Length: 621
Image (cartoon, rainbow, N blue to C red; front, side):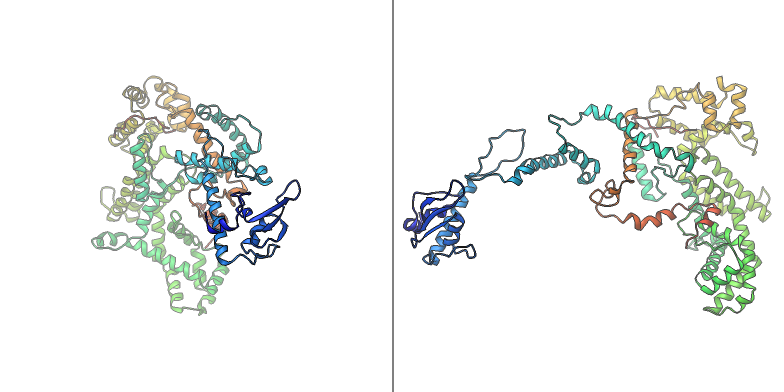
């Protein structure tokens, strides 16, 4: 016991909640409730009527509390009094040690401190229960290894908000089986109802939203595809055909003179020079106000500034130049151009020289002439239509057409060798070799058109797919991955044999004639009933299909909500915390829709054996 306690404290009133009551003498309690008492200070025996807070202020020299401080309390006494208060607080802390919150292990409730009453705010908002619920939710994240990003999911937030605002006594969350069966089917039906207004507009506006997974042909994308194929043998990573063709166009139109490449560069390096000259003319006219004004007087069409990232941008630019040839020539021989002295007279003279050079225009025509088959294939493939079953044949036909145009222009006989074509063929063949995979070969083999006499007789030396060594090898490799079980695969081989050899039901007159007349999908619907396994759509399960449908469409529908663009749930389905504004990138996204169709451009002027596993979807033909 401290010295000050022996000298001034009384033993009548001991309370750790209010230890300083012992340093005053309580005369009487004022009123039935509250904390007011009539007391006198043990240091100076002055009678005061006040609460404990005034006792504390009086003894501990706390100014501004409505009571004078005690003049008899020296600095030494003050230190002792503060120590008494601290010791009392420490004793209270040792009595009230809270246990971890977990209702699964019942624990005796901790008694509140004496005279401690719950405030109205605590009672109204159930602060203790709220803290317990937060702890349970956090424990769910930690135990299941859930991403913290899930906390931004609006459906996660709304589920707890709904449960908290409704009187659902005894409610239990859905079970494992309910989530994967009845609730999943119920949610799919719900989403289909939500999508109905959008689907009803497709016949009027067309399908403008396509959900797909698209990558370019970068090495990292190919490496990712190989990793997926190794894990799931029934999945194929197929390079984008349009991107592959565009890379071939760039290789042809942007030749580089490097060590050991001199001979090849000499064969087709002139193409890059012609395109460079066209770019020089376009930039000169569009970046000089006077030159652009003169050009607009002679042409109603515009010079398009096509981004290099657009497919076949170089060919599109040359096509526009060919359309503007007469206008450009009239411009540079006009009096306005002759008097043009705004910036660089030398460059203006060079522009005039190029535009009036017939040899230069002949080269432009030649480039467009032999590149037209490539450009046409890009336009066919750069659509929403399904073209996988046509790609293999289109590549062969495209290369053959390029050869024909070059041989005809250079007046080379069929049995002779064109060094220029050999270079172009090497570029195109290299690109095709990198992009072709077994899926192309299987799709080609399942197209009934390529077994018809009409198609076989179009070009000499054509053979049906089942008699082509490369196609047969790649097709069988693909079938092994789609049908890992030997017994099932044997039946598939038998069905394909009937289809390719026109045996059984496939030998009827209508079946053979329709191979040329009908599109592949219609033909299989009409004549493919005898080969159910070969044309069967291979799915993992109905449950898996429903899950993918619900998952994808919930995310797409959320983009129409205001909360997706701002607030706590902004971009909730994209991992990460920092994202650019949707509005800031809208212009870039709109320009990404630019197609190769010139009318659209005109309207958009701007500057081997796999192990088992579930089988996935086969090719639709």
